[in-house]
Image: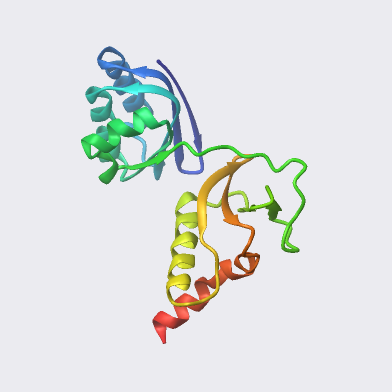
Length: 196
């Protein structure tokens, strides 16, 4: 197991690679606590688990200890096997755990819908790429608003997958409904319907 860390503007990122088995969990706890103990400048911790291949119950306890130190803890880039451990144990209900997302390239793809952030990925799929700095929560909120608009009868298409493009979030849509590209900002409409 290897651990690297980076601190930037209140966020501590801890990248963990390899297996976090029982023996390595003790090392992880010592190193992670050394990074956070006594510091008041850490607002949130992101654990980059994109290179983690296994986590034991002792490793889960380390994550819980970190959660107690800083309430805003996210574990990102989790592969399917490691996510399964978080899911089976119920840890994904008390700690934000984000699965690794597929990576997609837009190189050579034409722009679609007259917008600079929407690409024609295939004949059937368009891809809306979000600006840098957009969080997964922002993307989830947009998906939820689009679903709500759809249920209310507003013409829109549903995103069917969240992917990554050059480190940014993106949503895949059916290209048979180009109106979805313009309908995505329906959050305002949905909020107005709820407020009115």
